[in-house]
Image (tube, rainbow, N blue to C red; front, side, top):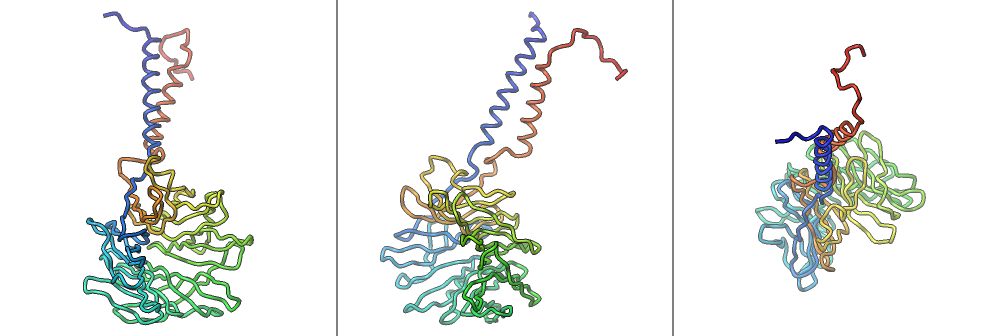
Length: 367
């Protein structure tokens, strides 16, 4: 068989490498999430919290127009309370215990739903989060924790009156906010040793801490001098402005132990979009799902350590809760190994396209 010339061989190699680069780039540009509809109880639904197994808690409107707390199951949503009174689920732990608020004759009752039934915490109370040890936090005019069925007031920093707790991690660090005498609100961190930290702002007058992960990273939102509010994260005492997706305000509600943050932001056109903040960038979650999915993801509230996200969006024009799952074989941007393949391929292309030297003898060792 006739041999190919070196130039011809190089041409074929270059062509193969270019095809490899194109394929790698195309694969790396695929959507990162699959999106599933949580369904409903006869009307719109909202997913608010998610545990490690991907079970979602939230609320959904029934056919009578009443909001009902729910927990997701493989067979659809399971209502946690009777359909005659409004109820909302705000937290779920890895054991599947759910916390939230039930309204009876217009009065709020913090509620814990477990395998043994529903436990109410008293009139005028709200239950907002639960950790894996079963500690519950909320508020009844004062921020509190519930441990082994006992309510304990957390106390407040000087100058704070009304307060409420919204998040707790597995170490017992609690976050929330309180009201100053001038009417503005400031985020608060309650440490397990009993100490308290009053959060600052982003140049404005108010802040609210909504969640905390097991590394102690706190998320929430705070006002700017302009009056807009921006999502923030805070670790080791440093508050970072997460920015927006082009609009005036943004709000962070969920954070996992990898530091991935979810919430929602206003866009330049005044609409809202759910976001994921990761590696220093706020990403519109709508750009990370298939373009033909039929979804418009409006607000994200919860994220677990597997990266599953829940919230609410429009599906075919109807409000519904969603669950995003990150397929392990699909990525939204080139991973480090993909970037390495592309870089090596491009380097090889450049090397092969160099003009051959006239002297084709062995390389010199003289430098």
